[in-house]
Image 1: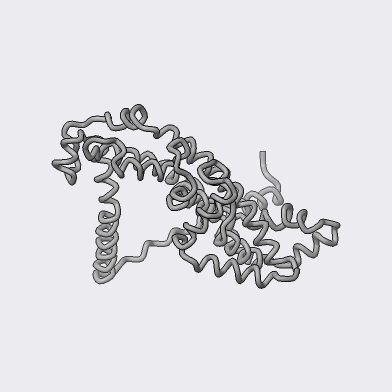
Image 2: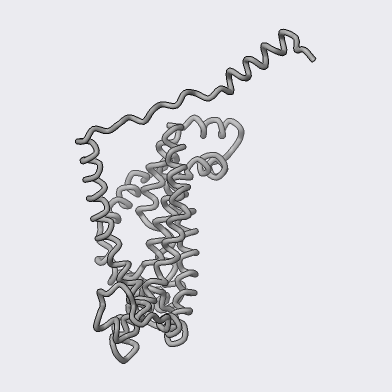
Length: 306
């Protein structure tokens, strides 16, 4: 059946729209550019090997026998290959208890930090009240003080409050941190104030504006704070030294330090110690790679909006 002129014109226009654009030929590199590119890759590969080599050695020694690890610590291929170290980790140490304590402390501290730090950052960035500048100056001062200086005062406070050697003493001091408040305050100040004015016109209060309007826009900062809080709390060691002393309250860093310190009582036992350290790295690695893609996407969206 013949097509009328209008239909033919439409089909013709569609064909023109769907026609693929001509492909551009890749630009050929000059010999000097190829040499520079090869040199760059060689340098990156060299430093990548240097960075990864200790982790490869750690993994290799985990699957060695104790004698093989002591006599040939730098050999990459275990001889013989064995996984007895992992069996000994779960049957001969308190590693499962340390994992439970670390998960409990890390989850509570991370969720609390994301909420409290963002709430405090929003208050310092948007609300006008007396002493706001002094509070922010105090937060900056706390960030400038090395953490090791505060260990003894922290122990004295926990002891006086009756929180020493308890879950409350292990968790409560980690519920907020100055760096997280600083990060969230700086990010909230980059959000246009017109959004809050529109929310106030609609009858939203300060907390409603923070929760429903501003917080969803702070996804890049929230993801950054989540990664930093999880990693920092999971690897927290100095705080556990002054907060607890009972083995039943040890987290993974404190437990690993106890193993390295010779609590096993015989031999160096490199495979067992390195295997426990390797298992400790897994949750942090998973969390980082999960949130890394979202962080890059969120940061890109935030840059486009600005």
